[in-house]
Amino acid sequence: MNNRGIIIKRMRTCIYAAAIGLTLATGSGCFSYNWRLDYAEFGPAEAEARAHDKYLFIFYKSWTDNFSNRMLGSEVLSDPAVEKQFSDTVNLLVEAGGGPRYVDYMAKYGVVSYPAAVIVAPDGSYQRQVGFTPREQFIEFVQKAKTPKSEAARPAQSP
Image (cartoon, rainbow, N blue to C red; front, side, top):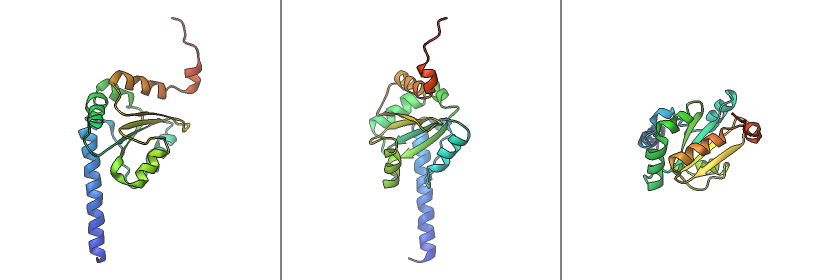
């Protein structure tokens, strides 16, 4: 294959990857999350979160439309109460079919199946939720993950 053929093949691959990512984000019913679709590297999203002292929300999803992916996207992530939880985070969409690099990246957070949600704190600690979780439980997971450890350890204040 000549250089022109290689370039065309790479461009086609990039276009397909972008189309799949947008389909995943919109198909999940969560287009308003301002997803980062970092196909080349995951580092920029992590660096942005650290630089701005923000939490990183990683949604690890299969490109297939299985029940758990569909339910988490349409029943949970598309809910305005859930969307509100991520208005102040850097949001990264990771597609499971992206090859070994994607699998290795998610293994860093202990994720071995999808769908999965990982919330990484600015200090690098993280919480993960694997599989479908009903809306109320998902919101509890997010709130707990976004509560700094020092606050979580404090006793509740009496009214």
